[in-house]
Length: 104
Figure (spheres, rainbow, N blue to C red):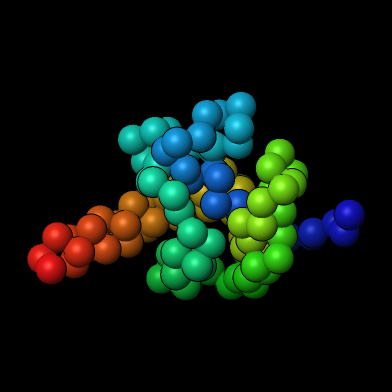
């Protein structure tokens, strides 16, 4: 496993409302979203101005049978702060998507 200096790995499961903390969720259920996609998390990182690299072939270690992808983010602050900012932005993105679908 490679060492990531000044980088943080972000997995979709961190933000999934349907996952427990033991399964890997890292945010409160009130901040979590339904079935977050790695591309939506990348969009959130881009909107926050975070340098990032997308890896679509990665497997979350606790769910090695599923390719969910991962996002590698430049770490200029603690990982937990990055996760909280991404969660807020991802929540906004998901709400906008639901509003657009509701109008159809």
